[in-house]
Every structure is written in C-alpha cells, then in structure tokens.
Amino acid sequence: MSSLKSKKVALWAIAGIAVVSLIWLFTHLPVTGSVDVHWPTKSQTHTLLLRPAGSSESTRLIDYAPDQTTITGMRIEYRDGRTALVSYQGGRPTVMQEYFPDPTATGQADDTAKLATSLKKLSDGLSARQLSSKIEFKKDGWTIKTITTYSMDGNYASVAVRDAADDFVLTVYGANGATGVASVAVYDGKSGALKSRQDFNPDGTVAASFTATNAWGGAKQVYFDSIGNKSREILYNSRYDVAIKEYAPDGKTLVKTTDYGYSGVTVTEYDSTGTKAVIERNFNDDSSRISVRYFDSRGTATMKQIWVKLDSATMPADRVEVVNDGYVIQEVYEYHTDGSSTKVDVTFYPGGKVVREYETRPTTDYRPSKDQFFREDGSLDHTNDCPAGTWTCNTTTMPPGPNVIRPRVPVGYYKVVPLLPLPSLEKPQVPTMKVSLDLR
Image (cartoon, rainbow, N blue to C red; front, top):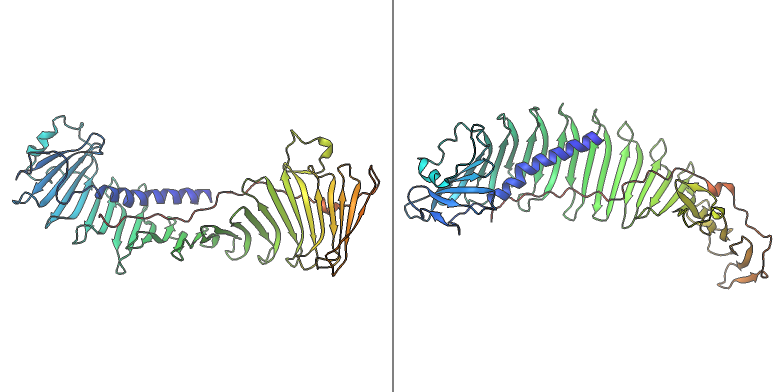
C-alpha cells in the first residue's frame, strides 16, 4: 500500500504541474495593456515590458496592431530560462506555447533592452527549443479549451481537453519515460472541482479510482491490488463522517473497517465471512481512552472494556492491576443476550485494581438493579437496591471503617487484547483539487 500511496502522490504532483501552476501563469497575461513601464511605448516594433524584480518573469515583448492598443502577440522570458509565446486574435489570446530553457544558453543577457531589437519575429529562436506546454483558448480569450504538456524528451506528459459535456478531462502519462496512461481525471467545467479520477498500473490495470458522489463533499475512493481485486475503499459520507473498508484478497470479504466520526475513530474487525463483527476498538481524539467491545459468534456484543492511559509517574504501583499496552482498565460492561442492555457495570478507581462501583441488572429493563459503592480501601460503603416499577431506591450504608465485603469481579473482565498500534487519528480528506478554467 505504501508504494501505491507514493505513486498516487507523484501522479497528483504531475497533475498539479500540468494544470494548476500553468493556470496561475495564464492569469498574468494582459489583454489590453499593463501598468508596467514600456520601452519603447507601444511602438510598432516589439514593445519591451520590464517585469518587477520579484516576478518570475524578466521581460515581456508585446506586439500591437496599428491602433497601438490591440495586442497581436506576446513573448515572455522567465528568469529560470523558460520562454512563452502567446498568439492573439482580435486582441484576445488564442494559443500559449511554453518552451523549456535553452540548454545551450549561458545565462540571461545583462542588457535586456537588446531583446526588443534583436528579434524580427517573436518566435525567432524557438524552433530548436523543446516545447514544454501548449494551451488553447476558446474564442472569448479567457476559457481554456486544451492544455498539453511535454517531457524534456518530447513525449506527452499530460493532455487536458474539454469534453462534450463541458467538463475538463486531464490525462497524465507515465513519468520518467514510461509509456501508457498513468491517470485520467475529470473536473467540472464550471467550478473546476474534481469529479472523478482513475490511476493505472504500468500494465494498464486500474490501481485506484475516485468518484465524487454529491456536491456536499460526498465521494468514494477505491484501491485495487495487482490482479484487479478491490483491496481498500474510502467512503466520504460527509466532512465529519469518513469510513475506510479493507478487504481480503478475494476483493469481496470485508476484513476491517475504520470509521471516523465527529470525535474519535472506531476500528472493527470481522470474522472469516466478513459479515459479523469480532472485536471493535474506539479511540478518542487524543488516544488517552480506548474502549473495546467483544462479540460472540452471532456478531452480538457481549462485553465492553474502557482502558485509559496509565501515568506511571503519579500512580502508585499497588493501585495498578493489569497494564495493557500502557493502559489500565477503568470500566467494564457485560451485556445481556440482546447485545445492548447492561447486565453488569463495573467501575474502578484509577489504576484498575480497586472497584469503585458494581451495578447489576437481572433483566434488560433499567429496573430492578443493585448498585454497590466501595471505598478506596476496597470495602463496601453503601448499597442501593432499586425495585422495578418505582424510582425509589433502598439505601443500606455500612458502618465506618474497613469491612470484608469485596466484589467478585470475573476474571474475564480483565481480558487483555492488543490495543496498539493506534490507527491514524487524522481523518482522511477527500481530494478537492480544483483547476481554474477561466482567466477572469
């Protein structure tokens, strides 16, 4: 899974370079002029525009129509050696071509003003340079129609086009000279929001897929193994409700789920059929408290333990009972056969050795119940007997001083299962990559 994750990160990086950074670049193209100082001022030869020191550009050369207002062409020189050539029609950009730096260049000329007079055409000297990207605009001069990027060896790096539904489809090709399609993503043609994405293995099989399910953050992301079986699925039901499902090698049998709620993470493991829960762990936001629920062969809950992190520096050793992965028991619930009604509820003093409260309920109803409260020395303090059909309890209080009445806690209540490693407590974020498809 780690290699797949690394691959996906790399593919997202390629997509970002192919679209987002280029779109940022295009927003700096003037349509009717600029506030920068020109030299010479809108001449009928190339007008030189010097860019501010903090700009990624060094200069722009702009050609104007005889009206000295309508731009007919532009060449942009970047400080890192790249060059962009922009074609205009009716004063609006139609095509922008960007070139990799000239590998034979020795550096930026000191007298950049010579650039305005050394070129007969804005395209001079670019035919031998390797094209890095080409962008085509619609007739409005704002809306992007296609984006094509290239690698240094001249192969396609990515191609993005508007489809018949006006969505933007971005295809990224194999990196480092690899052939074949690496990913295909679809962006909403108006908002630029990601609608779907597929990542591919070198052999062409699908490695992962993403689909947005609604406009409120709902989405589904699925990962596949080397033979095409589903291995993992992430369901983004909302920004607060995310569920991860992990599957057996058959791609169908559920093995484990990880649910992210408003607060905390719940991890559930399933039996060999993938239909019945076996054990469930719930971790609070700072992992200081872990609850564990156990299930029988029917998938019905039988018991829940609550473990809290042990502070061994402040907790006396004689107060500590069972230490489990650095946690001690705080409370135990035993359920009736319905799997939800509490049969026995035991609460411990810090350290998990001395019982603070021991409550029993013989039926699934809230009453009758018997609630025993114990002192820190372990002896009984008082008992509340609460009959059925009434809110009144009969309280019996023990005399002051130690006594021999102690609760009998079943050994199974101290059952130890691994609590660690912790799941990632950071909720997965739905991919929300957007592209700007309009220059206004």
